[in-house]
Each structure stands twice: as C-alpha cells, then as structure tokens.
Image 1 (cartoon, rainbow, N blue to C red):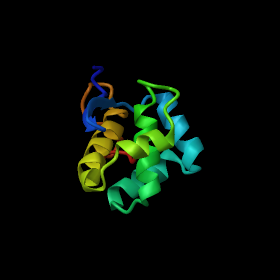
Image 2 (image 1 turned 60 degrees about the vertical axis):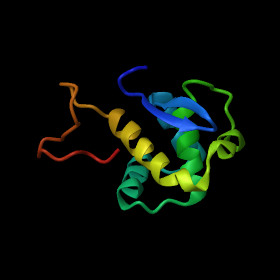
Image 3 (image 1 turned 180 degrees about the horizontal axis):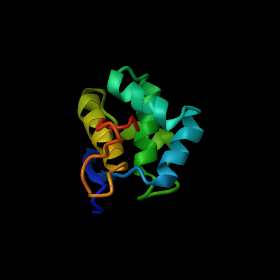
Length: 114
C-alpha cells in the first residue's frame, strides 16, 4: 500500500483510501466544491451525508475507476461514519505531505487546508 494510502474496512472488506490527483479532481468535479472548501468543511466537521459518500467514493477510485456512488453508499453503515471521517481526514492530509515526508506546512509554519 503506498504511503499516502489509508486502510479502511468497508462492506466487509479491507480497502484503502488514497487521494491522488485524479481522486481530487473527481471529488471537485462531482461535488462542484474546491478541495480548499472541502478541507475547511472537514475541519468544521459539518458534512452532509451525501458529501461523505462522494468523498469516500473519490478516495476509493484508485482501486476501481468504475466504482459508482451507489456502490460506495451500499458499503457504508451509518454507525461507521465517525470512523470513516477519521480515515478520510487522514487520507486527505496524507495527500499533501511536505517535501521532507512529514506534515505539510506553509511559510508561517501552519498546515494549509487541503
């Protein structure tokens, strides 16, 4: 599993979340929201249920580019949403490492919003 992939259990299977460039583009295109706005919403923790499904879908596309939103929705148990959001946040953060392999920081020393 690449270092920027985060393991997650969904639909009775172990899968991996990865937000490569294609996933980020798919996420923006499907949600019509910029990745910066998605990052702000992640920090606030105030997502619509449909947005959680869309974000998860984008993060799973690297394994199956033909995966549909409905297929992802059938993998999600509502009780697992907090665990899913932890993994999503970790995977999006992993998509933006700094050049030394650690957490990404800007010139002022704070992390940019994904």
